[in-house]
Structures are given as structure tokens and as C-alpha cells.
Length: 177
Image (cartoon, rainbow, N blue to C red; front, side, top):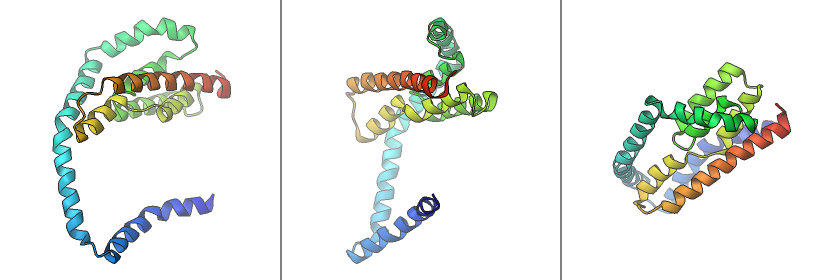
């Protein structure tokens, strides 16, 4: 464990030293290539900015309008029947939309119920096993100019639902209720 900690601690500084050294050996002008790459990064950031703003506005409207609370209230009878705590439903709804929003909900759940509670463990498992589907589609697909991604949305949401269900089953089997 100590060796792994030391490797983790030194991995990035070693890479930051080895990559320019390798480029110097290959006679690549490191600074010019770095500046060119940084310029490309700025162009990509400006290209995805409208997609990102649109997604963040939609998330804010969804939460502020009460639509998320209404959806959770609508689903709560079914989730109670399945043994899914209602407290984690906002996380299940938010996770495909926003990683930082989902992390905030996870932190709230852990602060309120504790990290060793069933809700805290389930929230942590869900946080680690699901992805930010709409963020990935917006930022990554937007950065490379992919416009037609209808199957990606469906597959991403199916993966999120599958991960959510698997998290609930695994937490019930491993931690009990």
C-alpha cells in the first residue's frame, strides 16, 4: 500500500518531466507545440460553450421549477415498493444531467445520514457507478462536432438506469438495509 501511495504521488510529476524530455530528444520544439495545443484548447472551449450554457440553464429550470420534485413524488410509491429510499431519487435524476449537481446531492446525503448509513453507501455507489450522460454528450460530442447522436442518448440512459438498479441490488446484498 505504501508503494502504491508513493507511485500515485510521483506519477504526474514524473510524466510532466518525461514528456518534455522525450520531445526534446525527438527534436520537437516543446514550447511551440504547447502554445499551439493551448490555442486549439481555447477554440474547443469556445465551440462547446453554447452547448454547456444550454445544458446548465435547462438543469436550473428543471430544479427551480419544481419539476424534479414532482417527478420524485410521482415515482416514490414505486421506489418504496422496490426498497429504494426516496432520499436517493434526486441523485438518480440529477446524475445523468450534471456531475457537480450530483456530487452536491451526494455530499448532502452523506452529511445528513452519514457515510456508513445505507443511504450514504447507496449514494456513494451510485455516484461511482453512473455517468453524466448528458454532460458527456454535450461537451464531448460538441467538441468534435457530432450532431446526430440519437442512439447515444438512449444507450447512455439505459446504462444509467442499469447502474442505478445494480447499485440498489448490490447495496442491499452487501450492506443490507
